[in-house]
Length: 215
Length: 324
Ligand SMILES: Nc1ncnc2c1ncn2[C@@H]1O[C@H](COP(=O)(O)OP(=O)(O)O)[C@@H](O)[C@H]1O
Ligand SMILES: [Mg+2]
Image (cartoon, rainbow over the protein chains, first blue to last red):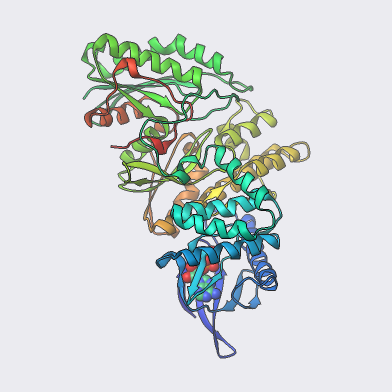
């Protein structure tokens, strides 16, 4: 099999199945973590990725067709096209992506890493890949984090197209939006999403309530 | 430029002296938290009592007197308000008396700068792990040079998580290094593992570990919490390395003293053909030398504040601080 690419947790190989081009995604063992944990993560992720691809397909989300699953690997359709992150992203593509995410969320699927690195564009169409961090969840927090990851990955105007489209078709817009601002207010995302501030100007001297180390 | 740096953002009062990037002294006094937590006013009182002595100690070690100083820096934040005030007031008073400019230093940036300097890395992906913070950062240029946070904890810092666990298990002293000792030779039990892209979260893990405290041995719990939380950091880091095509990795902050974390990072770096660096423990624990080191650079670049304009910022984020 020819190696196509190496991601953070998996290596993608090119192969043929029934005469059709396919990819095999193999989750590699990581030397840094203990064996039990390593195998648990790889197994669990592989299983949940396969499950989610299947569920997403049933919900009408454009995903690669699933060909087969083993303990740590998945065989699926090879998608033509380029990663959104490697192309010039258009407003139209962002609206498309927003619609895709709301479709996922309406079926209670959270993606866990919904960024331009995991969207493949071809012609006017987008496909979602990489469901390794996905979960079946109806938690507003999880859904809001999906939005945040995209917010951080693209420019403000592009994100606006994305979120407008998402919120116009999401079933739980209000609650997700509320949770999104709540997470941002926790302070951790503030600067990162609004862009860097000027040096030395800040929210300043709020009183810390908990006797915990902050440094 | 002979620079004095003062640090008092948490439980340590530190005074360091640096000249031309070389550390001449790194004196400190550390508040003993025992089996309890930290009451900010108590810790601040401790700092106030020790400030003069620690500064004197640093001057003696460097073999200089106050009059020889050419610059002063202190930790502006982040940290606990009452604690931060002590270094701020000391720096301000000294600067006023000596007629010197002051550098207001960001605590996280100071940790990063000294670690980067010691490891000789140029533009690494940085893992900053301390009590209240757990972040992945990288230098960015716009609109000014600063460390941009590209991943971080969605809830609590890893240090505070380990401290809470230590308190729950009644370890003494109740913090991370005791968790590390207790973990030796433990067996792995399954715990929640939460990574989202380059972000991660620790509360689920902590809650479950605390539930298990009544049933399982502290040894196995400590071992599993460490393995799980450190593996989460590693996964997020690996994603950051790939996304930025970076070949350098650096760890700093209090939790960077963990030998287990460092050995995991060494392995991670090897698998990604990246260089890995860190600084000696003395500079990963809170200290004054890192503040002096960063302050010297700031002052050399004109980032000097007059004593009357000095302040503290309890939630001073790394992104808000200009880096030189
Ligand atoms: N079905 C597919 N068709 C074509 N290319 C794919 C497919 N799945 C993955 N890839 C390629 O492999 C890369 C890594 O795959 P991904 O599933 O995102 O794994 P990782 O978790 O390592 O990011 C993708 O960025 C993409 O370039
Ligand atoms: Mg991916």
